[in-house]
Length: 110
Image (cartoon, rainbow, N blue to C red; front, side, top):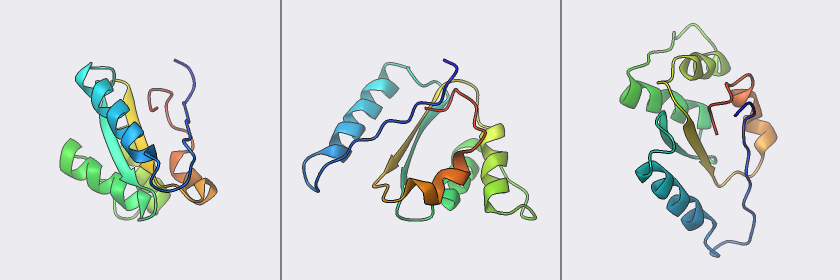
């Protein structure tokens, strides 16, 4: 409970990686494993903007526009609803490119 879990599923296209992640996410959601919510993002298209949009639409969080993208995403993480949260990043090609968006996160984000 004190670390952020990062799990990677690798394989060639079409073998069911996304389906496996979807099935886990829905089962965990239905079992109440992640009371803080489930956030699914496509890693090929603006992860930071997806986090901000999700936080606005589903959590009513409005990050200040004067912050840069990383700052606005951090603002969202800090004000996320309570409880364990499952974050799914589908189709990650270069984690290093999006890693700054996840620095300093609380261990409740999985």
